[in-house]
Length: 296
Image (cartoon, rainbow, N blue to C red):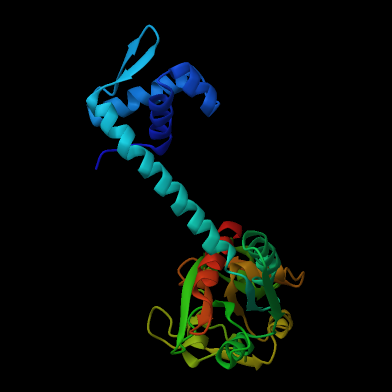
C-alpha cells in the first residue's frame, strides 16, 4: 500500500483548488515551503508528477487531476469517520462501578476515576472500597460492581480480566531475623519459615499462589497462623510468628518500622489485573484499561 499522509493530501487538494501554492499555504496557515514539501512527498510516494509550475501559479497534470478528484472524497470521508468516532465516545455516558481494596490499588483508583470522567462526557465513576479480594469478587458476582482491580489468579468462570501490571514478590521479616542483613533472599532461604495466611483469598489456587506453594523443589510451603485482615500480617511478622509474602507495592503501603521487606529473587511475580463481569459495558472497560495503564 502506498504510504500517503493525510496532511500531504490536504495540502495538494488546497493547491489544486487554488492553482497557486502561495494562496494554498495562506489558506492552510502553512509556509509555502511546507506546502511544496508536502507535494514533493506525495509525488515521491506515488512516483508521478502531479503539477507543473508556471509564471502565474501551477497546472495539474492528468495524474494530478485524478488525485484531486478522488482525494477530496478521501479527506472528507476521513473527517467524517473521525467525527463519528468522537461522537461514539461522547455517547458512552452513564456510570461505571469500580471496586478496589484500600491497599496498593486504591493509591491510583481515584486518579483513574478522574481521568475516565474527564475523557468520557457525562460519565460517573462510582468507587467502592472493600477490605478483601473476596469482597470484590462478591460485588462482581452480585452485579453491584462492574469492574475491580485484583491480583490474579481469580479463578472465577464468567469473569474477564486484563493484566495491567506485574509486581515482583517481596517478603516481610522481623527486624531481628538473621536474613535481614541481606539485600535479597530466595525461596530456598525461606524453606523453613512459616508463611502467614490472611483469610482473604478468593480460592485455594489464589492462596497457593500467594504463599508460593509448592516451592520450586516440590515441597509444600510451611503454613503459619491464619489472620482475618491484611493489617494483621505485619503484626504477626513483627512478633516472630512467621513471614509474609506480598506484592512489592504493599511494602510501600505498609512500611512498618518493626519489619524488614526484602525482594525474593526466584519467586513468581504477581499480576495485577482489571477484572470485569459479563454485564460490564465493554467500551468503558476498554477505556478504563487504557487509562489505568497510563497511570501505573
